[in-house]
Structure formats: C-alpha cells, structure tokens
Image (cartoon, rainbow, N blue to C red):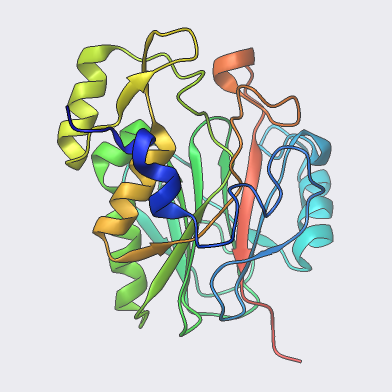
Length: 253
C-alpha cells in the first residue's frame, strides 16, 4: 500500500536540524516569522489577538494590525475559490477572492481562517502572496493560481509556509469526498482521525500542491486549530470568529 502524505510529511517538509513547530506552535507568543531568507515576514494570530473577522469593529482590527505589522492590512471576501487579487497599495481591499499577491514593500496581505490553511508565500524579488486554502480551495486550485500570479509579478524561486489549521486528528471527513479531493490534486490525503474515523489531511495536501508548483515548503506553525485552546475553530465550536495571517516585506530603512 502506498503511504499517504500524512505518513510521509515530516521527513519531506522539515529542514535538517529544524523540528516541526519551531516557529511557535500552539504555545508560543505571537511574533513575526521569516518566510524564506529575503526579508519577508509573516504572523499568524490566535484567540489572544481576538476575532479579526469583519464582525469585529474596524477600529479594533486596525489596532491589532498596526500593532503586529506597523501598516494596514489588505484583505478579501473569501469564497473558497481560486481568484487572486493583485494589491498595489497599503490597505487596499479586494472583492470575492481567496488569495492576494503584491510586489510592493510595506503592503501587508492578510487572509482569515478558523480551520482552513492560511499560507504565506515569498520570493527573492520581494513578491509575496497570501492564500486561504481549505479542501474546496485545494480542488479549485487556489495555490497554483497564487503562485502563477506571483511569477507574473516577477517572482522566481518561491517559498511557502502553512499556519495553524485543522489536522487529520480532528478532521472527520466523508470517504467519498476525501477520495475526490485526493483525485483532484493528484495526491492521496485520505487518512484517519485520532479515533480511527475517515479523515482528510489538509496540511499535507497543501504542502503537496505547493511542491507541485515548484514552491519550497518551509516550516510554519504546526498546530491543529480544533485541538488548540489558543485558536478559533469552526469545526470545534461552530463559531464565526476568525484568526488571521499577514505577510509583508517591511519598508527599507
């Protein structure tokens, strides 16, 4: 039997000498993390930073945004599709989409999540991307679309990191739909929950598709949102609250 990606992931995705979750995991303080070695930074929030969905007053959200990145965040109305917005100025807001890209310094790209993956992408040319990716986004092709958009802006080598999202231990999933998702992306990500029920390994699927796009996958924040008391989880709580990820390249000087 061919091993699933969830069984192979640890050896394939973690650089030598670097343990999974080294950037923070569930218990660390929120702090910007380097994405690649070219100056891009990313931050993944949690319950301690509060609900950052549009249900929260804009003044509260802006205070968190400036406190973490020093600039306003660009966002989108996420619809589990594959549309990518190109951002050209700080704080620019997009429409119905699930990813953003920019070639500008001082522009923070953000996506919201509860159990879906929030993916930060960077390149040596300073082109960055942010993608919201659940199972529907995997099928729709949001990750390849984001990488293509980055390359149109001049990105060459791209590195990506995945933040907190639901892990297979808690992601019970219909076997038929899991098989359809696996077939759509060309990788088997069907697995089992901690109690032995059929499940989907979302982060393994995200990493596999990134690799297929030629993206080098770096360690992110290896944390199950449904297990973590420090993260919002729609699957666990049925809540509309969201944490966020922002990625940016700081202004020079």
